[in-house]
Length: 513
Image (cartoon, rainbow, N blue to C red; front, side, top):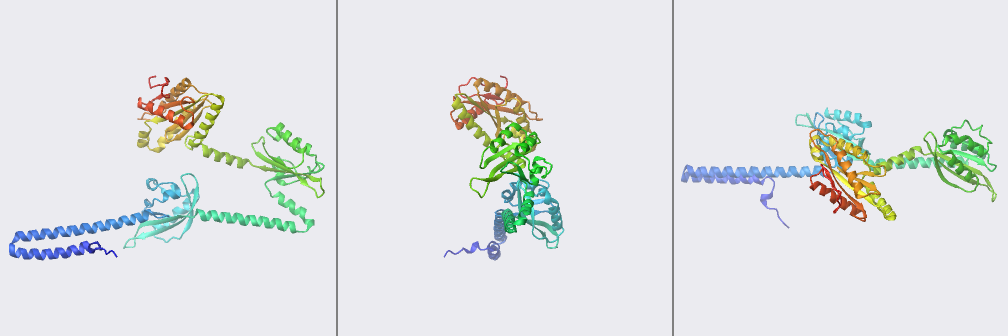
């Protein structure tokens, strides 16, 4: 077994060196007795050197221990943070980035980290807890919502603990936080399952109840549904509508509809529908056939979107039916939410331009279409000259404002069928269908002029533009991007604030062109 050397034991540098120094001092004294003052001075210097060496070794050991403690603190899975007695964040573990998306440096830089991280719903409560901890009051674990930098909310368990000095004064407040999002998600699923079981249990109890009460119970159930229900019997007369049906179609009451022919009901509601002719043709087509109809969506003039589905209700006698049931569901909010999700997936949240993901999809579609029709597709790429100094001098907020202005300016010079993208940082792209080198050169000139017009006090913003055409400059999306990118860097090399086409093109321009 390997044995550690004695000089590696904690405390040896001081103890061992002191012993050696004492021995050296005695030796020096003896030498001094024999050889006089010069020898004594040599011995004293040796003692001083050994003591200094021992102190350096001791300080090095303390530094190594401190470094090890720092590494342990920064590698913890949960989030640890320290606040001053005044409430200022002094240190936070890097694991905050995994939990919230904000780096430790960002958290330390903001004046109020609680406002940055804590959801507004819980902010006042957290501030009260923090104030109590700074006063030295004990705190227990509690749950709070953090707001991530992408807008999502994550549940966190927090604990504030005051730290005292030897005199009992609060010198620091330590905060520990741990994500409980998975537990919250499990609780929600459990609640949904319990609710679903309870609904199923309620339905089962209704079906087992006495037959004379079934109709009333069924009416009560259908009236609490958000979906509108209409039942038309085999003679094509209205037999039942629930409350949601009356609300969706803005009808008066159930009694006035009883026995009404389905065609007459259809004519009475057509004025509410945006495309009345289309819906009438759809409804009459369904009335003329049996079986279940496919789902159909239509819009009201007031902006609501309704999803409709209908099916025949089979009778106990073969070949006969009891009538047809229609179900109408207001899906306006669902469609708006879906559109918002699509927008988030394909739009840059800062400039509202299409993002890089949408760019690659659109480029592939445009190339495939141009290949089928034997036309050309132009790809223009540009980035901003002098943008980094603006960020460095004025901060990212000013840089973001400039990017928004550039996006708005470029929108003014493109045609309706030309798509503008922000593909990253200060890099942009324009996809031009039915393009030519001359048309791309003219567009590049307009882009350079518009970007140059974006104002920034003390700094100059310009654009370096490069473009290429399918199929002459590349027959795939990657090849076309490489050609346009190379042209852009040739524009930068030529002095920036200008444009260049693909290699061999005569459509090049500079600031004075």
